Each structure stands twice: as structure tokens, then as C-alpha cells.
Amino acid sequence: MPDSLARVGREVIACERCPRLRRWCQKVARIKVKRFRDEAYWGRPVPGFGDPRARLLVVGLAPAAHGGNRTGRVFTGDSSGDFLFAGLHRAGFANQPESIRRGDGLTLRDCYIAPVARCAPPANKPTPVEIGRCREYLAREWTLLTNLRAVLVLGRIAMDGFLAMLRETGRPLPRPLEFAHGASHDLGDGLRLFCSYHVSQQNTFTGRLTPRSFDRVLAKVKRHLAHEADG
Image 1 (cartoon, rainbow, N blue to C red):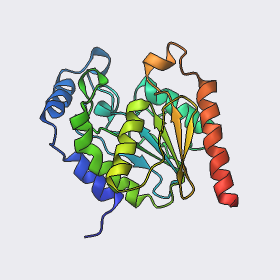
Image 2: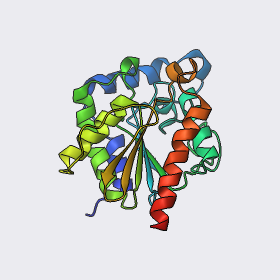
Image 3: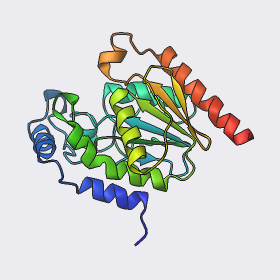
Image 4: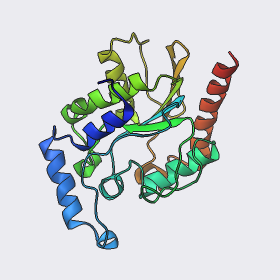
């Protein structure tokens, strides 16, 4: 049977590779928090989502305990998602500036989002081994998203996980590739890597990452995609 994004998604949802993460996600889904006590939590691994013809891949870290682990869609239902989707909307990659739940009408345009870890981790810190167990899913999405020309990594861990996936697929990479907000790197064949601080509260509430500084990164992405289209 040929592979597909839908098949990858089904296998992600059914994944049981990381017992620690599965126990944690299920515990969070059972205990909940007061503000979401009447909601049914997803409590399972969370697949990537977006436009299958996307030229932009956004790589995040992991679902949030009361965000993606609750709603079943990465960056959905939490403040990180509020910041991310508002930025993607301003840049034209999303049809609306917020995402509250699955089925809320959000559509990504020319953009696909995937985390390097598919389960919400305790303290938002998956281990390197756990990220490694998820790498197959990112690699398969990478293969299936045949129009990609730009990758936006949200944070150093996302960048490290993405580059590790590329190395495992045998893609030659230039060295060194250093992470810095606003940095970009040529990966060859018209593909370019862009870096941003993660859209977590730790960065957005402190002003380390602002809407304006995030917009500047997305503007660089759009210029690159426009150049590739003209070329």
C-alpha cells in the first residue's frame, strides 16, 4: 500500500512507542485543569496537519498538555497557537487568526505543520530518545510533501530534530548550521531553512519573541517562496 499523509496520521494516533509520554498524556486527559474540566481530552499522539501541496513546512516541538493533547491538533487551543496562527494569518498562510478546536474552520494555505515529538511531554521536554522514536513520522511527511521549498523551525530543539531527520535520510547538509532567531540557511535544491524562537509563552510573554519579529521571519519566507516561483 502506498504511503500517504492520512496513513501517517493514523499511525501517529495509534503510536505507543514512548510509555512515559503515553502515561503522561493519559494522566493529563484524566485529571484535566479547572478551565477545561467539562471537555473531553484527546489524550493521544497528535499528527501533523495542513496543505498537502504546501511549500512551507513549520516544525514545532511537541503538543501542549492542555492544547494539542486536549484538542487533538497541534498548536490548537493554547496561547502558543494563538500567536502562531495570528502570524500565519497575517502572512497569508492561514485563513483565520486563531484556532480553538478541530473543526473550527481553520485552513492552512501553502503550509503544513508538524512537531518533532507527537505526544505532550512533562515540563514540555521530550527526551532525545523520545524525539528519535518520532523521527520516522517526520521523515515520511517530508517525503510526501513533494512541493516543499522552505522550512521554518520554531526553536533550537525543533531545528536539531529536523536536521537529524535529514541526516538519517542521507541528505548532505552544509556545516555549520547554527540556530539564531531570523537566521536562514541554504539546504540546496531551492530549499531554505528559516529559524525563529519558539512561540511559547516563555518567549512571547517576556517579549523575546514579538509579533513584529515573527512577521519579519515570515516575510523572509515569503520572499524566498516568491523568488522560487519566479525562478
